Length: 297
Image (cartoon, rainbow, N blue to C red; front, side):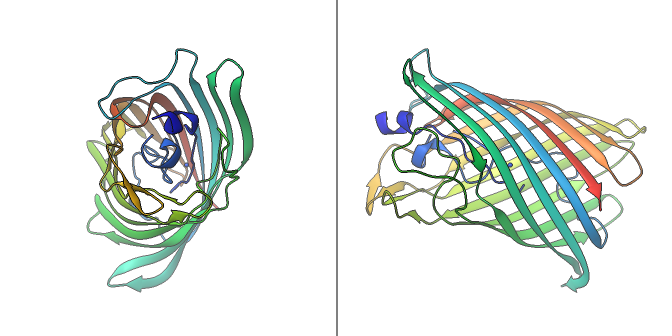
């Protein structure tokens, strides 16, 4: 675990936009817990801007048995802003609307392991882009299928404590569903499976991951939805170091917390949530605050 602790870093995407201990450095290319209400209802043809903000803090790293393996002075703090551009065309694929998106994250990451052993970095994270097809099954029920491609554009230096990028490509098939009722139940589920390439600087290849972002709430009829949201994370295959399996290193985590959404009725809306991580293994355990704004351009 020593190399895991030394590498406890932050990674942003977005699929939006984030953190930290299975896989190299204990991070995922996808910022787990990013999505919230209305995650998987593709809007009408047009161009849309989204902005995500996340504050993440962790003060411990868990091992394979769920035991804390970091000193009391350990702390990771990350602040990230991710801009996402979505373009929905007038074209259709198998009856669904075809669109494209791209995400540009900017991250400030601070890692402190022990007195005199820490590092801070700021810069652009790994860029995400890809196609999406959205289906509208009824006024309330919507689904999407997509393929996100994560490019290694984030700052990375071998041996650093704080690395904003993962230094490898990744591919993430996505399936999502949203049920939206302004005066009743709202339920959202975004399922992702991450396929990772090798980090050529270290010879390390992260294992594959299953990730589910979720939200469940109730529409109050005045634009507000209140409820809970979070994520489920499970690494499904072992990491590899120079082709050799890294045993007892699969990450897992669960997070939940309060979540709210406000829809202006004029095309823009805001969501916010707080989530606390638990049932963690081989990763950092912490808490995150998220804001998301969607604005037609």
